[in-house]
Every structure is written in C-alpha cells, then in structure tokens.
Image (cartoon, rainbow over all chains, first blue to last red; front, side):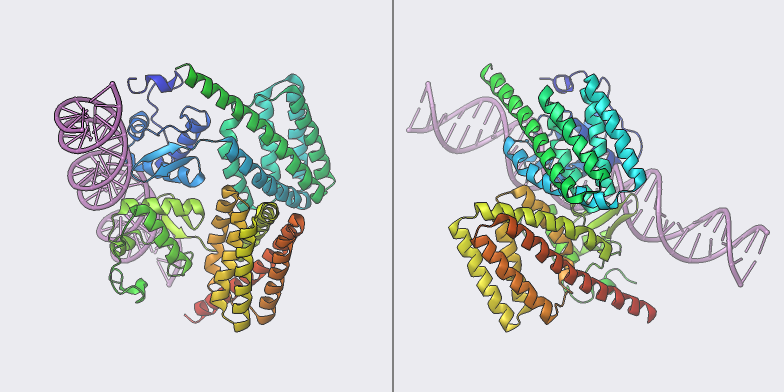
Length: 242
Length: 242
DNA sequence: GCTTTTTGTTTTGCATGCAAAATGCTAGGC
DNA sequence: GCCTAGCATTTTGCATGCAAAACAAAAAGC
C-alpha cells in the first residue's frame, strides 16, 4: 500500500497542520482521537514517520506524545521496537470494570453528600434530556448526555484525583463505545438505572447511589464486552477470508 | 551560583552515568527516586539543564522521562515554564486516601476469593516477620514488609489494571513515608489491623477484608497527614527564620 | 521612591542529524 | 525444498542546534 491512502479512509482529505497551543499536548489529543475513532487499529504499529508527515511535525513532539499515551495505557511502548496501539481485549475490560465500578461507586457516595442544589438541577436537566434522546432513539446524543451526567457526578464528588483516574480508564474503553450497539432492552434498562441514579442523588443516599452506580457500570461493561466480542469475531472472519 | 554545587548538597559526589537499559526509562526510575528521597524538593522547579549534566544525558530523553512522570502525577508540567515537582499537600492526601481505600478494598475482595494456598502462606510468612520487626522496633524493616504484604494482596487480586492504578497513587505518597514517624500507639494499632487482615484473608471473607483494608488505609493516611503537617510546620519555621 | 518599560539572559520547545538496533530480503548451504 | 546466514533498508533512540517564550534586571518615567 502506498503511504496513507489506505488508512486515512477519506476522513482526512488534506494534511492536518494543527493550529494552536502546546504542540505535544495537541498531538496527544489528536492521537487519542485517532485511536478512539479506530483509525489507528489496535495491535498495529504506530507509524512514527507517517504521522510526522501527516501532522507536519517533527518526531520529537510526537515521541513525547506517545510517551504520554503509553503512560495512559492507550499505546504500548516496546524498547527499540516502537509503539503499538494497545489492543483492548475482553480480558482487559473484565479487569477494568470492577475498578471503574469501585471508583464510580466512591464518586457517587461523595457526590451524594457534596453536590449542590444547582449541581443537582444540572444533572436533572441532563437526565431528562437524555431520556428524551432515548425515546427518540438517538443513540449518539444519548451517549453524549450519558457521559456528561457521569462527568457531572464525578465533578460533584470534588475529588480531582478520583476524576483523573476514572477518566483515564474511561478513555481506554471509549474506543469500544464506537462499536457498541446496545440492544433495545439493554438500553431501556440503562435508562431505568439512570432514573434510580437520579433518585438516589436527589435523596442524597450515598451508599445506595454507590451500589446503583456499581451495578450500572457492570451492565455498561457487559455492553462493551459484547461489542468487543462482535469486533473480534469480525476480525477473525476477515482473517479467514484472506 | 555556579552550576550545580549548591543544590546537589554533597549527596552525589561524582557524576552518575547510569548503566544499562532504555535510557529514558532509567531516567524515569532515577528521577522517581530523587523525588521520593526528597532530593528534589516539592514545589521547586526541576532544573533540566542541571540534571542533564548530572546524568550525562541530553535533554531529549530527560524531557521524555519528565513527560512520563507528569502523567504519573509526580511532577507538574506548565507550558513554556518547565516542570515543577508536584507538592503533596494535605488536601492531596485527603483526596487520595478515599480513592486508595476503594481500590484496596476491591483488591481485598478479589484477593480473598482468588488467592492460592501458597499465596496465603507467603502473606502469612511476611506478616509474622513484620510482627517481629514491630516487636523489635525496626521501623524501616517493618515498612518494607508492610509494603510487600499489600503488594502480595494486590497481586493475588489478579488485576494488573487495579494494581497499576494503586501503585501509581502509592508512589505519589511514598515520599511522605520518608518523614512519617508513627507513634507507638498508632503502630500497635496498625499491627492489630494487619492481624485482622490476615484473619479475613485466611477466612476468605472478601467483604470483611475489604472493609478492614479500607479502614486500615484510613489510619495509614492519617499517619501520612500528620507527617506532612509536621513537614509543613517545619518549612514555615524555616521560612520565618530566614 | 515607586511603578513601568525595555533589554539581556536563561530556559523551553521543536527540528534535524547520526549511530545503533531491528526488520526484511536475498543468497548460500544442507 | 527448507532452513540459515549475511546484507541492505528501515526504524528507533539520543544528541545537538536554533528560534521563541519566559524570567530577571536595569533604566526610564511619574
């Protein structure tokens, strides 16, 4: 294959000279998007040279960005062998989900006791808008609101360390979201759980909220796992067709 | 002041040409030690140039190492302003302790159901050796064994993601350990808690172990906080004496 | 005397160059 | 025909060089 025509897939018509801010930080964000969107397939090598040309930057900032992403767990760095996009296996998700469950449960407990009336109102607004998106079957918009709600709760917990850790994990599985096609029943159940979340938050029932969130996350991760399995099957089929 | 005579403080008589492995990785470890040992005071700038001379490396790998440490939260990177050693405030510890509590509680739960008889025997051996060190008043040795026990539990949980996250946080407060001088009562209590930990682990009582660990960690962090407060007072006194 | 501006120095950030390791390929041996 | 050894190419890792931004200090203005 000649350079970049294959992988770009039409998404990036021109070279992308990123604009403002600290270069390596922008690269981190840019690469993150590339990985999440699946443009950089998991398991494949990260073509350092190619990306340099594409982003019109030298290797130094790009390498720095890769280091950061490696620390975040999105890529794996082998000495003298470059970077590979970290593959998100089902086993990985099964590892991550109890951890995220514990973290989000803690966030819920803290948020229940610390959230302001204003914050509560914001969550409520987000919640009902999300419900609306569910009714309309707008999955992407639903996901967006869903994420915002969880972020609000995390913020209300008032614990940046907790938030950072959670966001790190969430970032790693975010890619899987792109291929998660929730069944109608699962979706409805998720919305129900969100009703319970809001109720617990309004009642400021920390322990209960924690338990609900833990459970909610468990279901969410089941969804992710299904999507991942489907992807793996797909990949296996593609391999056998070669 | 001329170059490096002031800050090195006599601790490093010669230049330290580190030996084998990937350079930037070694630098990460080296800098970590420097920060933990307190040679790089919190809040101060990390003298990039100086460290380059000291380690006989160029700025590129050192900068990469700093990026990694920043991702770990040990240093803070300000754009165009370089790196500062992240100060560990009491507020930080108060943020981190509930998170570590949640993580270690989860680790305990998982470990209780997954630990092998052999693993259990290892923990038991470590535990009783630790008790011995307590009786002899050997604080440093006690700390080492203590840490090993927690690592064993973490390993027994069989969840590398969880372990990595916990180790990350533990690494950040490790520095504070260097100045934590436990009172006799606190120490005795910690040992008692460890007795309970071992008992719960042997009984494979996951939930109970989780609760104990959470509590144990709470006390541990109280100790750290006290040490930190003492340090802050010390710093304040030093400042007023200037 | 104090603030403010301007200039000089240091430091940071990025690009480039070069040596070593790894990868892929070809030729030779079994 | 298959495996192995040798070589060429690519890729990684580190060092260095240069421009811009930040920091510090001195001078001008009020």
